[in-house]
Image (cartoon, rainbow, N blue to C red; front, side, top):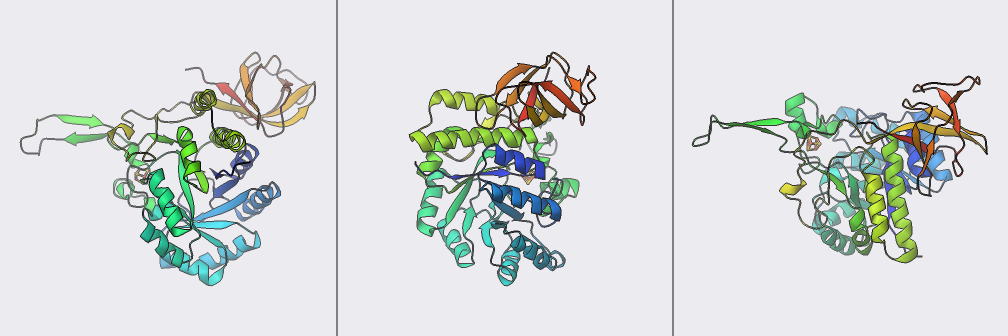
Length: 402
Ligand code: SF4
């Protein structure tokens, strides 16, 4: 079998961690209650961190914890206690961008250190300096090409992780303060309001020789990265880990992305190639989750004007999670925890962990007390028709009527 990169998925919550791993992720990254860059994510409590670490390790997956905020002295003093918890739970690595955090980690723990993309490492000299400081793996800046990444890996001897999918920053990650100025929310301490996605006006009135027009547009919103077609190049460049952005995104996103990229990596591992028929199917799957238009970013050529998403954000995804399978009673029914409303007769799609999706009709919906249900409600348990191949924790999704 050929060697392929690790698939590293976002785990915005304990449930998303489980979904990502069951759908094929080899590793997940997550945040504790402090020190990460997603204050609005459903960050892990100590108990959830413990359960998540056991769940992942029992299935051979790794857990990386993000400590990539830029900290002030008052924040740093609380770090040693958190590090001893991570050591206790055998967390596999921490993802860091601040030099002070790296120094504190080295004083109090032997945990493996990965450099966050927030540090914008883009060249070999910088990589070598980070290596001297104790960094074992570098998550390269998203502005770098695959061919440059290959050279940095060979020259530095460090493990290299690169983003393959997800939302992008129009700025060098970690060097953007639009959100700080416009919303009073610090993007380098977990508060980014995604100000680059908003509509802005250019007012030419005060510019000499300019027309008197005012132009309104989405000038700065980047399309989303989709690297599935470049996967063979990631592998040929020797990239050690391919990373998916999106701790704030849904279960549906965590499951779909993990399944698609894990299928592609498995196929490459077996045959040394990925065939175009499958790429089309994978791309179709990737269009079922909420996304902006897709771009290859800077993976092959520096991202240009065509990487800007000039439209308003899609508010409505094409598919939503209808429910999660809690129990499979063979030849009888599925017990489903409902996530969004559907009706008797709705066409649903079961997403198996490894096999292609299976469409089925909800011919009956029965409540747990045996009464029939006319419309499902989020949070309730329902019995739906049995689907051969269903397993506990499978996602069931429904097409959204536009
Ligand atoms: S405002 Fe946009 S470009 Fe700036 S940090 Fe946030 S997501 Fe990135």
